Image 1 (cartoon, rainbow over the protein chains, first blue to last red):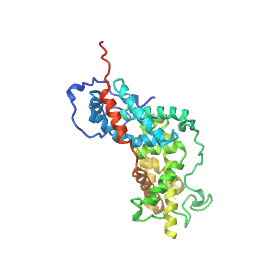
Image 2: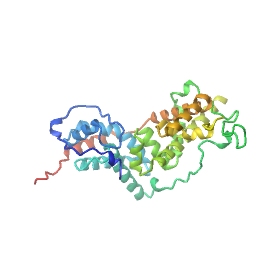
Image 3: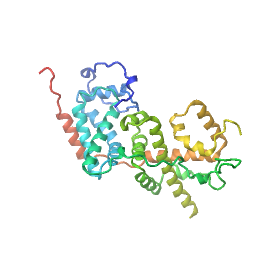
Image 4: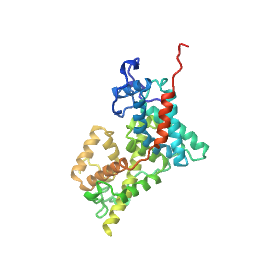
Length: 244
Length: 85
């Protein structure tokens, strides 16, 4: 793993004893490096066995971890198992964690390694080893644009331009959420995992690159393709609703 | 049309980079200029944002209380061996 080592600050001794076990919110800003004060503080609390700190990150990060694990294993139960095993590995490794990546990147890295191994045992196709076969250059149906040679080539065709969804679409209703959930499940594995890490887990782009070993360009392509397909599904849902 | 014009079908492919701040400054300005004059592309960008917010707001499952309690017990019970011994 090579995550933003260049920006790593000089290691400093963490003296946990003087930090005590203050109650603080876990607000770890997305960052590939370990440099945020919040993270250093959190790490110190974990190293002094502050169980409130541990409970906070377990509650804060496990939902996204379950989502991600689910992409690698065959069942929800297996995903839960992978997440639990990851936290146990975190407990055992926390004193050896050297802070070359952010704490969160490290935790997700452990998760993905464990989930991947478990997926292999379950003979499930391993997501990150899949070649992204989704090679289409455009994420919007090219027929919606004016053709080459047209005076306005590449512009939206009359009648094919996106229509506003209306104010009620801002907060998705139950039906729209179901559309989105189904569309997410149908995405190619790598696109789905990137979306889960970025848009559900709230991780930063460079964290995701570190965890999945992607180039920045590749990460953006996967994210863009995935989001575009989800938007398209919502568009179909909303347009269909208007016609009724 | 100027040399700086980017057509709609190119703009829609740049919007994730645009939202991430991943475009070079010149391209970002071109995208912004396009969006200012092109309601359909602006609608598209809004819909992409709605989609992203929608994904972020999807209900998530978490570990059961029992599982979390087990992890808390494991955390409390774990002691690093004293390196001096």
